[in-house]
Image (cartoon, rainbow, N blue to C red; front, side, top):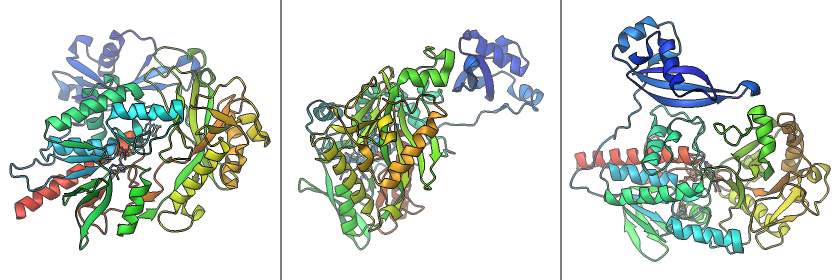
Amino acid sequence: MLRLTEIRLSLDHAEAALQQAIATRLGIAADAVVDFTIFRRGIDARKHARILFVYTVDVVLHDEAAVLARVADDPHVGLAPDTTYRFVTHATADLPTRPVVIGMGPCGLFAGLILAQMGFCPIILERGKPVRERTRDTFGLWRQGVLDPESNVQFGEGGAGTFSDGKLHSQIKDPKHYGRKVLTEFVKAGAPPEILYVSKPHIGTFRLVSMIEKMRATIESLGGEIRFGHKVDDLLIENGQLRGVHLANGDHLRSDHVVLAVGHSARDTFQMLHTRGVHLEAKPFSVGFRIEHPQSLIDACRLGPNAGHPALGAADYKLAYHASNGRSVYSFCMCPGGTVVAATSEPERVVTNGMSQYSRNERNANSGIVVGISPADYPGDALAGIAFQRQWESRAYELGGRNYHAPAQLVGDFLAGVASTGLGTVIPSYTPGVRPCDLSSALPDYAIEAIREAIPAFARQIHGFAQHDAVLTGVETRTSSPIRIRRGADYQSINTAGLYPAGEGAGYAGGILSAAIDGIEVAEAIALNIAQSTRTA
Ligand code: FAD
């Protein structure tokens, strides 16, 4: 199979134009193309008046070698790499031990799925509820201001990414093409097939819910087991080797292979690991606010006369700025046509994040505008970053009126340093509601200064970004994990053998795709370890 890159066609091209463009590039007749699949479809929007699709296609021909030799000088034609996923091993019939996976976010879900597909019959322990019940609890906070600390945006089947934009792109290097395996499994579970080739795939919240249920059924059909409402609250460690886990309901479960995929909000679990002496380190993360603009403003700026074109959908943006106080400020988890959501998992705290539906057709665009911080900003032990997050999340709860409303400020007022007393034309999407106020005491001074400087700079790239009545809501503190659970080349904790820290909470992923890929890698490490110990036994 040949791979052709950089095939550029207009937004409104006819379906047959792609096959014709392939043939023209290869110097063959269109009917000599036996078959082709789109591997990637990007968009070149640098010239608003002439936005183009940019295709990468995999092409099947009868005489590939001859054609390849003829176009040897074309850097955009070559052999297509093999992206097929192959299992590293399979369990033997006399399975000596069942691996345990703690957490059923994208990382735990994929660790569990791959282990199940290899025949290792994993047991997944999830503190939260099945996704439908969890959805009801999450709406309890959003609609009635009632938080369930064990069932919310962060905790429950599907993990933190369930109520999200479902963006599935990642900057990580993926030499083994594991991202393809993740996307393929998502499509099998009901994701739109286009996620396999569009350059910035996304799924949206509603579809994620039913996909997660299908993946659960697949794991169970392969001999895996999922136990909801099962919070791990202790580890059974003997001479530096993990032997099992203890559960909050008093039970314990023995296993020598435990994936720890608890996400970045499992603060009680991090405390337990610290107490047990598992090696943890404080790591950098970012804090800031959500910003909301009319989506039409972003569309007009990014897509010009093509704004609203059905092939383009709602436009996104990605912004970065280096402030004069040395802080970097950047847009985080941008959600076109989406909503700002209440994302706390702890009582009497307020945390923002963003989500959208597949259609991305809500009136506002939102993104985090966040400032990078490091352990030097929160000196102390490995858990000091958590104390820092809690301090600002509690402050936001106070500023919001102590009822889970988010503190909010108009961008114009924020830049002028005056408190907001009302809203303008941009109606904030955060529920249960917002309270206009002065956000300057909602984060450390250095963060406020850096964001004040960054917003006008961003407005030079997106005209209107500093619009007076665009809305800031706070606080965005859960951008990534404040800790890293250091692991070795064998994916095991550097001081607790048998414990496999994984995903975002352990500091090895940031986002759905990278967490899922990390889950695959950890599952492979466990499978190989079990296979090796079976051979040597
Ligand atoms: P998590 O998804 O956090 O899963 C951890 C799981 O472990 C949870 O289900 C939790 O209940 C469980 N758990 C915790 N402690 C225990 C315990 N002691 N015992 C048993 N179970 C436990 N990323 C993107 O790539 N694209 C997006 O569009 C996007 N949007 C987002 C929107 C929102 C509102 C949020 C909150 C996050 C978003 N993210 C997005 C980030 C993404 O969700 C995370 O990066 C990803 O979910 C991390 O996966 P994970 O499996 O490592 O951890």
